[in-house]
Image (cartoon, rainbow, N blue to C red; front, side, top):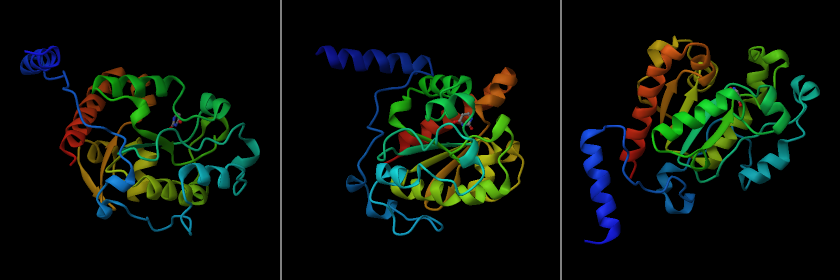
Length: 234
Ligand code: URA
């Protein structure tokens, strides 16, 4: 028996006894040209004409001052990851650390998100991460409805360019923004919601788990569901 089939057999035997061991898996970053044309879509409200790439789009909007947050931000926080990612995470808005680095989810909540991804055998580099707002609300206050509306075309354009198979809403602001519902988180989470031809999952924001670690069991269950959906992708 070869070394690599030994390794697979060993992993499989572990998986029989330990449900949290994940087997080697397919690539999470798949160029759009290699995906079914049906899975590529332009969302209503995306910027038209659709920019040619995420990086071109970032250049186009990174000096945005369409709302007051453009005057108070340190850095514009566009998003992080590959245009070819099959999973996109959408958070609320940049916080202090993100405002200083220009990268989403790099503070404590981001560290926890990285850990939760690792727990289901995924790596942050293989997914795309962004927010409903691209600029930090002062003092981390909640996004205003007018700010969400102004930023809406940006998120919808990102999602159109990436055309992921799975979108994960981190927290109620992201869920409300994409689903347009005020249903409580406890009713939204743990379900696979068909949305614009994609599969959408809602889970609590990692910052919520930092405040209430006992609730992380729900996040763990939601991430396991994410891993299951991902394993079922064609
Ligand atoms: N919280 C968010 O919602 N987004 C970030 O980028 C960081 C913290």
